[in-house]
Length: 74
Image (cartoon, rainbow, N blue to C red):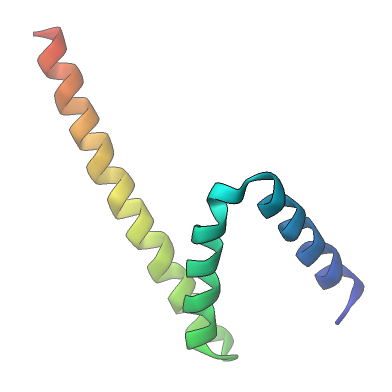
């Protein structure tokens, strides 16, 4: 394992220690990437799927928020 990778892993571990609520998200990411194997293309596609899923969820929540704000402002 090279120096940069060791540093990145250490920073991730420190981040998760300071933000334990993020551990579940990291577990999900690790699980998806593990299933994708070592093929960089498959790992990229898996990560893209994860990002798209979260963006879709965020978009839905933003639309709901906009609707609620519009209702309050009527």
